[in-house]
Image (cartoon, rainbow, N blue to C red; front, top):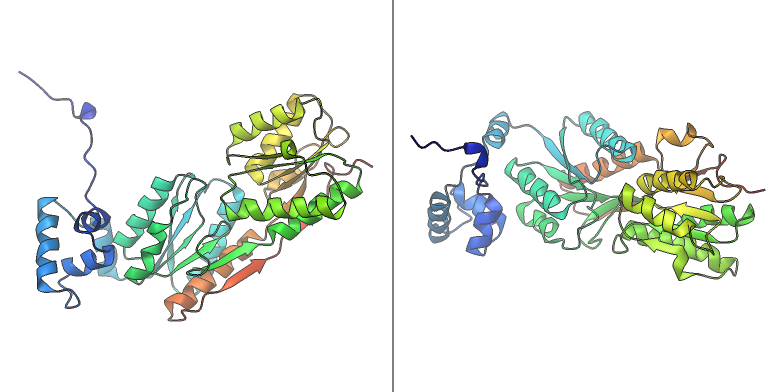
Length: 346
């Protein structure tokens, strides 16, 4: 008798509101309202939507339906790297602030992937969250999934890596000023050839930090060397390989400013692997508020975010939006340069 192995059968993806909206050429909000027989949507459109939903075997998310029956107050948060201290601290700040107003928080990890980020927003819409707080994945260059949220009456606040400043409120750090201050410290303590190792150039956070680094070089009339600016991926292996290649040059840098915690610890490891001394051969400052910065040897000089505070501020902005304040706010939470053992040659 023939049998089928379900494990080998491709799993059919559940039809979403977004799928129906795309096929009909309307917004997700229109589809959602039509399925609820909202009087805002004409009878013809309601019929078209319901017929397509039946044809595509659309089934509302049972978890979302359960949530709606209980009528909770939920905020959705999407982050690129939930496992890092920075994003965990941000989320902690959001949760603390949300709880004061009776809100719960659901988080999603995009793993730096555009498609995962878009799916997370789709799930939040299905769950009928009250609002969304987000930090861009490094592969995101198309912002349509964010632009759709206002159409559905869902407010959005960005933090850290941001976009569409004319549409959405944001909380970010003063990365340009902090990078300039850190680079100046490296110059003042004996470094001559300072490299910047960063993530994708399209991210506003990368551009701000790189700008501060370049401004410090200009202020000190130091040459800006293209080979000393290495930007690519927010990925440990990429950063490790890129830093090793940089340090194996005959004209290698004698200092590195690293974009974030992942790149910082990759650079730290690369210097150690090549048996170079920190800071005598290569000084290092990284953007990180990871607790490990104070526990490695030598102790790491770091530009530290006030991550928990950023989460609180982002949540406060969102709650204002949810409460009917449609003002677009842009707030800067300053970073702090903490000098330890890895940066001063003198």
